[in-house]
Image 1 (tube, rainbow, N blue to C red):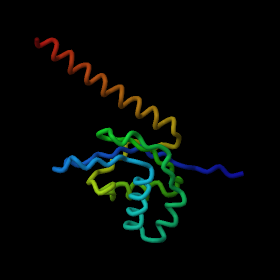
Image 2: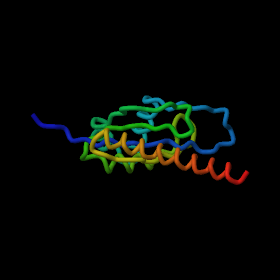
Image 3: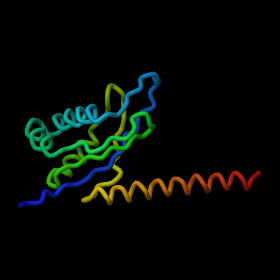
Image 4: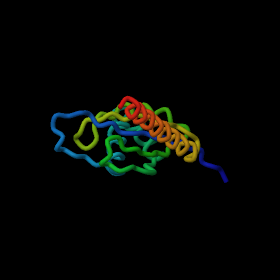
Amino acid sequence: MVRQKSRWVLGSVVWADDVDKTRRVCLTPSNLQEALRAAVAECWGALGTAYLASSLRVAHVGQGGEPCPLFVLQVDRAYCQELLAVLKAIRELGDRRCRVCVVHVGGTLRSGRREVEERIKSLFLAQLAQMQEGACSI
């Protein structure tokens, strides 16, 4: 029995500041998968689509209403670099301009979870320091 080696890619979607903010696009696994397929076809053609599509899985998508929703992708280790290139090529999701940022790439989901926890902790500490500075100046 052979163990499948895979990589877990943790990323976030940063929506562009459009003039028309009435267009709300919720990030869902289906529209993320559709954007990934289109970007793979654009970057690597039919052969890349055949290889990468079979090894790619959208494991989790955060709340789409957030300003920068997080997502988790699972991909075979052999195609991880190709996936990272494809993520940089995505320019829109659901007719809304965006940019995809890769937060963490790891061999286990646990390492990605640790990275998210550290980022949240540093954000909270920065907000706390900012609030304390504001309280001291009063």
